[in-house]
Image (spheres, rainbow, N blue to C red):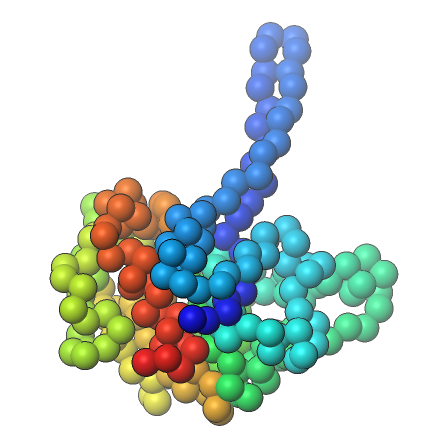
Length: 247
């Protein structure tokens, strides 16, 4: 099975409680992708999870480091975390552009997936800021340079539009509660749609492959019914297998 680096999909929450004149603050680490990690590992994949607050420091800075993996999955982690390592931001020292490195790794045969979220693609208020970057060059979609979210609290149901593809044969997909808009590149293939919008898009870049899943792997866009869907792990495992060339 594939060796996967999953970067992002975690956050630190800070809560301040006010009790009359007095208050106290507590913080906690939240892991949004634990079910995905468990599901992919149960499917036989070797997954390394790089927490969002560690991406700035620990995301690979050399091609040699990236070549340890078959697939890199970026999930809910903005471009600044890749660009602004501590050496650059704190010390003012030049360092490799890790988005350009990631693009070149895909071109040389790597597999890149981006999953949707408030800090993916364009992102909430455009803060993910992947439009116009080397990562966008490697992905099968053109990213909007502003807030690209479509919130669907009523629920919308994805559908497979490519028989025989990754998404085929899994039955009806559970409803999702939101996704992100993007334009599929001319040489890409749209495998799933929600309404008229592309939801699952695949493409090639040089010798490598890339995949964009325009919704979230975890709440809130992936509701309880999606997380408990019997084919949840199989669906994302198929995505990983395809990216690793195991189709």
